Length: 191
Image (cartoon, rainbow, N blue to C red; front, side):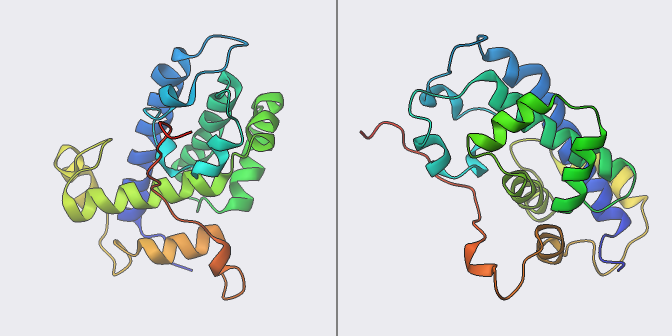
């Protein structure tokens, strides 16, 4: 299609690479095996603000490490696809997860507890757009990677994050109303 430009691919890869590393190395390390992490303590996990509040509310005791590991599996698959210069569509991410040798028990736990690839893609496009438009986001700043990004060929699609979102999430006129969009403003202080 040509809609996934080299610059956009590179920026998305930076976001996915940093997110995946942070989730695996920092966030998942905060969990205790076989113990749920209370919801109040889950809010700081990388890009959890893109997971709808309903997912958290359906797990009132908190989330287990397997959920965070499943989140890391999604981000690892997205990163892998972008490294291969492939679009991280939902179907491609699923295929990558199954072919990657990821722990399917953790992946299944993530999905059974309400996790969804869509949430990660939503975070990927929104965060990367913020970096391009505003210069930074919670994860990285454009100026840190400006030379790398601008070494890539420029195209009219470099900032077409809405096009990428529609293509990767498979958004159509029929399913558009059902596709949620973060970030969500979680408030776990209310009963």
